[in-house]
Length: 229
Image 1 (cartoon, rainbow, N blue to C red):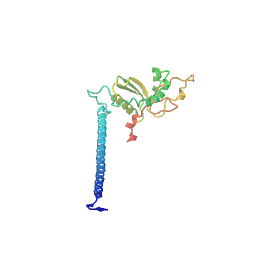
Image 2: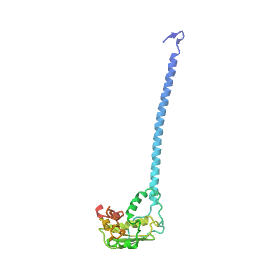
Image 3: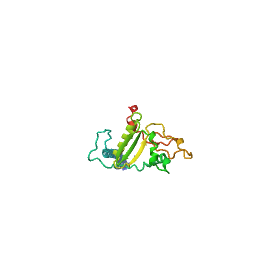
């Protein structure tokens, strides 16, 4: 470094100022990094807290809407303020059509003729019980005892359906077969045959078969089947 009469020139000062500027930039970068970390952590906690609050709110809302006890007790009576209708918080109108095509397929045999009283009664020899729903009340006439408690639990499940959706289940009458093997075979009800009776008798049961006309119904008997315990 060159010297003049007054000593060192001004270059060291320039280097000193350059060092100060670099330190300021470094401090700024460090501050930004720390601020970003703190802000990101706060955002994570805020979002997680909001999700937990929303989840708790949804669960609480769902649990408070359904206040209908599912208790199978012959002596149980409904409270005076029992709801006349059940309004679910989430509509199932978007998911129900997934099942419509199977219902229509099961009922296709009666699409043109409909189901008359005479047609229904022809299923009686195969049925374990007759079930009637009238004005929201359920009536049962038992013809034969089913295996274990399959008939009882099926009837109990329909009772819970009436209690879950009061006023929304229409009047109906059906005959139910509680065994697994089909009872109404297609080979016995072929339209071209002159001696065949058409349409086949409508009979609800748990299992379907491509060579049978059984109307499939959920097997709720697993709720109380001794094999499940």
